[in-house]
Amino acid sequence: MKAMIGILGGMGPLATVDFLRKLVERTPASRDQEHVPLIVYSVPQIPDRTAGILGAGESPLAAMRAGMQMLERAGAKAIAIPCNTAHYWYEDLARACSVPLLHIADSACAALGEGIVNVGLLGTAGTLAAGFYQQRLAARGYQCLINRQDEIDTWVMPGIHMVKAGEVRGGGALLQQALAALFDRGVQRVILACTETPIGLECIAAPQLPRCVDATIALADACIQWSTLNGQGGAPTATA
Image 1 (cartoon, helix red, strand yellow):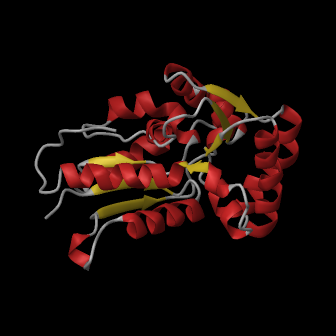
Image 2 (cartoon, helix red, strand yellow):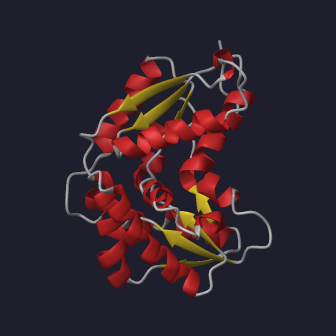
Image 3 (cartoon, one colour):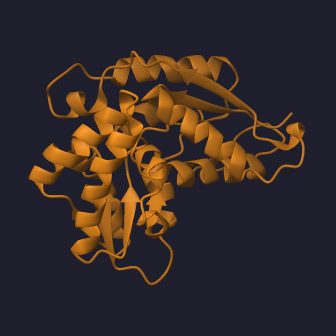
């Protein structure tokens, strides 16, 4: 059997389902047996990641470690986390597990393509404060622009919370305003660096979507690539 990939999900539940759907849709398979074998741990009770980063709530690290350990015991040979903000704890999580941990920001940055200089970043207040996207973009020579604080407070965080609450269309309308503001300031592409953002924007068919990099899709593609390289099980040999 192909080597199994563990999915540390539930952050949030709808974003996990969106990731799984995109992974299945993008896998070049003509029959069930050609798809990527997955073990999914979707536990929404993991403490809020943005609150943990900003000092307004409990750290989710212990809960995420517990989920990763369960995935390893279940046979996962690599792990992916379809939550951007959770990657603030990437180094701690990577040290705590014995299998490759795929990085969503590395996957998204690699998907930007050629000829791009100015990149917008649409993510949670926690992800933006953490800075791991900005660091990776700068290391690759990109200029990075984020929304103003008033836009984050008025459009970004309320839009994300609405998607999490099932008000997907209303959340998408708010997120589109934040997205448009970035493009109005001259960015060439925007990374959708929160797994709720593409859900809302796709719901309203936001016209700017073709100019965006969906980090959810980028992580799904990284999982497919890892599965292809490690198709028959055994010791993992690649990280992303």
